[in-house]
Image (cartoon, rainbow, N blue to C red; front, side, top):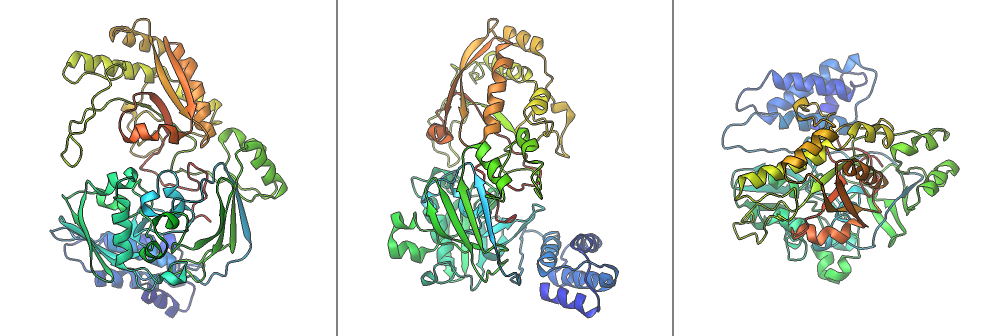
Length: 538
């Protein structure tokens, strides 16, 4: 379909229109054809017609990839008859880019030279394989949050299962392990759900029963029940990262060595990695989807902000992450360009988590949870006592009312920030509801605490993770005097996030703690919470 659309544009004798113009035309065409049963062939006709008719009106060329994205959106917009089946087939054309030059990126944390076996891809390093373009997932999100094919060239979703068609002739970086097959998909998902990997296992196990390969290029994933969480195991966006890994490599060298041996299908392959020091990548040419622009990428661990900024000034680094308070220090660097965007772990934003509210009696699979509410914490209520639950709610509201969010944005974020009052959405989101706003009102907060039975306040444990996000630490410190003003004393513990992760996964933590804020309704862009530049941007 992409080739047909490109040929149609070429036949017009002039340069094709821009991506945004084609997108608008296709969306308009699809909107006028939204009757049940519309076929992909009809959508193709609409796309080709749109490209052909407007090719003479634009000076900007449109790449195959641009048209591919437009076609993907068009097909995804197709209405379908019950039962709901979603199917998409796109054949990308590898770019003609010839990699050149070296890109040097200085980040806060590089991490260990491991975490490459699916079972061992624990947060935060399970993200690294995908974000650095070393591995790829079955499906992926595009920049407009539309699900598009990746190593699965198409999929069909029903109420009972997900059937994936594996893209043909995609090689692993290690040529001895051949090309991707359904066996690799099944191995990746099954290894990810083994005991020991709670991050991926908790995503996969509650929702999937049997995962099989009916043939060499087909994967069938039987759903335990109809749900939307299937997508989180197949894309790079959600927590269930599952980079497709080679079963042949695992069989050849064993699980322990495979965990130390990167072997993906992405546009970059690892040529050198030193734990907590550096990762060196080179372009994998040709790449089936998009050949990298840089021939070599060096990712250096530089924890000190002043050193990273100095490296940018001297040209020793091409990209560094900076906080809002550091922007003025790099603004004068010749040819430097500030890229501001919504980031996956919200490096400029935070949430406060009041842990211990474990009210589920059973797990997702129906077995007893073994957890109970930590009612010793003032913000956790006894579900058998409505009055106690209401008092806990008042405590939570009081802690929120004590926070001067505007002051934090102005002083720590340099005015570059959105106000967040609820999880998963903030005031910059087009779906934001002003009724969710919590006023900054210390006097009102004290009154609520008094009503809840804490006229003299209370002391509580407060965990601030360190080492991954300096803004998070600054905001955590700023909260302390705000809570102190309403009689609350935080006993601060600072340590790496991983120090508390076991208690989080086992649902035994009952501290208040601070972590990054993500607005799930806005585009995700640029740099992850551990400082890695995304493959899409590189």
